[in-house]
Structures are given as structure tokens and as C-alpha cells.
Image 1 (spheres, rainbow, N blue to C red):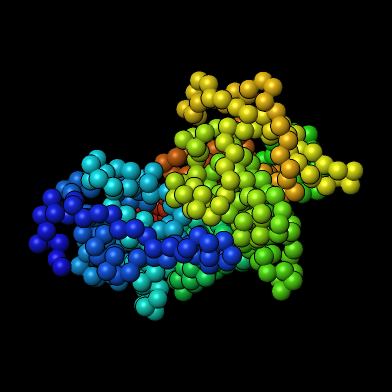
Image 2 (cartoon, rainbow, N blue to C red):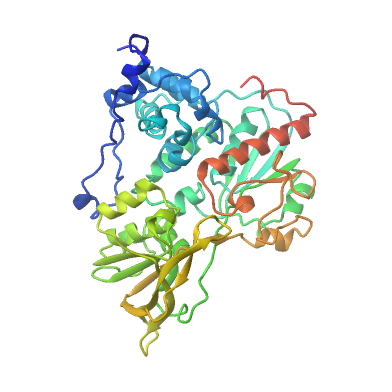
Length: 482
């Protein structure tokens, strides 16, 4: 069916196509992906819902400005490989973004038909075309311009670093990516569970960058193995991009946080996602034994959902989300909250921990919580939680996972004092270029914004790549042709 034969009214009458998924009862016993993806028929039907507006505001809602109307039109026509190529003009990681980006707060939020109907499932369609390209074996490697003779160091192989490396490599620059861990991908590998983002997808997308000539060096901790000054002065790099993320976990500062069984979401998820602790002893990194235990995760974001759903898959009898506000204030994606509820996660909302309780062997046995009510809005715009006097109670738990946010890795600031940091310990940049206070050093992603989204980090990486190119080459040639 061709989209031209449908009127706008007919397109808008098509219901949003539901994403097929694993049955909740089955998926809590495995780490396979929850969402199963569109079939070609579902994808074409969903693409036909796009009315191809004259002013596609969805593009402005995307941090990397994917040509959404054009790629969806190609999907509607069944030209899936062409649609994948169109997306990759602006986004080098579509299979990843289609899975983990909060489209409901970005491109889909401003979709014109969302005023009266559900928005077009832009994220589901992005995932479909990227998966179709990968599974077809026809992954196209972007063309690379002739060598410029310039060499750029990218610190961190997460979304910001990969996006920056991609753009610079296409422009003909020599790019070397330095990764502190033994696997590439940054937060995509250690932070997001297999059931939400299969790791082979991350590896496949990185392979494309390798074919473009990007060099990757693992197990290099910039700030310890080598410093930024040494990269520039001794190794001869013309510019440096810092995309190290925000991997320093915050704790709550309440009594008992040093008990055995209390850990950060970073540690818990890294052990499970990156080191496959769920498959011990086949893999030699163990994780806290959740089988038959009570596990509480403190926080309301996507990382908290990832942690609590992971604990459920590891056999927790009760897996709780404890959050001091109501569901309306939770920053996690609606889909993640929905999936968590389907999987039997127990939500204890308007509750706040005040103390962890342990036995005489210093093992965690419970958490004392106090019930909350919502008062006036705070600086975040969300209503401030206020304790209800006399409402304290103790919840028996064996494991606590703290997921209330992350700070910046201190190594960069400790070893490169001429880079300016904010009071929030994030790197200060010019938002138009991502340039730091140090000449020829740029930064982007969570190290600048604090914990944010994959696509925002990628947008920062692209902005920095353009600025680096213009600074090194003295002009903007190359970008306008993309």
C-alpha cells in the first residue's frame, strides 16, 4: 500500500501498532530482550500513520535532528535499507537509540497527530530499520573523506564518544578512542541490562566505526595511565574530546549504608551486565545472591528500574522500588515502569529510607522508612516530599541498591587542573561548541550535563566534532554536504 493513496484522515484513523513483547511470566526467568520488535508489516502500518507534515516539528524534538519524516516515508514504502541509510546521516547508533531513548519526551512528544491521537511510534520504527539492516547483513559503512593529517583523542567509548568519533572519522581525521574498561561501549555496556539492550547490538555498531578506521584502546584510564596533557604534548594529538560520563555513584548519607548488602546501582549493574555475574561460576565475577531474598532499590529513574528488574530475574522473592515521591514524579520512562509492574515489581511510593538496619555480623536485615506526602514544588518543578511524623516502619530486606544519581569521575579534574569544573563537579563548556576552558579540549555527555540520555550525549558529541573540525581546518567544509 502506498501512502499517497491514503488521506490524512485515513492515516490518522490507523491505531498505533503495539510492540510485541515477551510474556512477563517467562521473561522474569531470563535475560533475553523484552521487546521483540516490529515485523515488516507492523512497521509499514505504523509508518502509514505519519501524515508527512509540511513542518515536521518532530525533527526539532530530536537532539541529533534525524530526518524523521523522510525515513518514515521510506519505511511506509517498504524501502527499509534506504530508511536505515537516511537515519545514519544523523545518528550512528539507531539500533541503540531506538531501544533506550525517551522518544515520548522528545520527538514523539511534539508529533502533530499526538494532539488528538497517540503519536507515531518513531522509536519503534527507528529500531526496526536498524535491526532490519543488521539482520540483512547489508550494514553500510559510511564513506570517509581523504586523510586530513589531524589526530584527535576521544576519551570514553559511550554514546558521546562514539558519536564524536564517527563524525570526525567521516571527515578524514585520525581518531583514537581510549576506554577505561575491558569492553567498549561505556554505559551502554555496563549500565543498561541485556533484556533492554542486547550487548551484541552495541558491539555490531562499534564494528562499523572500526571499519571506518577509528582505533580503540581498551584498559586505558585517562588520568592514571596517561593524562590529557601527555596526550597533547607527548602523543601529538591535535584535539581531545572528553566523554567519560558520570560514573561516580551518590549515596544517601543515612546510618547503616556501610552494612554488607548495601551497594550502588553502578556496582550491581556493572557486575551483572558487563561481567555476566548472573552466570556465575561460568563467569568468575559473583553478585549478591538474590534467590528467595527481599531486594529494595531506592530511586525512581531508568537505572532504578533496570536494577530492580535485574534483581527479579536473579530470583528475588520481593523486589521493591522505594521512591519518596509519587509515580507522577518518577523520571523513569513510562514503558519501563509498565514493564516493571508486569514483572511483579512492588512499588512503595511516597516512602523514604532513614536508616539501614543490620545484625551483629553487620549484614543488612532491614530498612527503616518514613512515609511522605507531597508539598510545594521544589527547584526541579516536582512537588517536594515532606515526611509524615510518626509514620516510621521497618521493612525486612536482604539487599539494598542505591540508585539516586551519579557524580563525575574526579580523575580528569585531579590531573588537568586548567579544565574548569562547576559546583556540581561537571565540566564547564561553551554549549555552542562544547569547548572547555583548556585550548583544544572539548567535552560532552554526562560529564557536562550530569546523568542524562543517550541521544543528548550523542548530540553533544556531534556538536563537539563540528567545532573540532572547524578549529583544526579553519573552515566548516564537509558538514554541509551531510
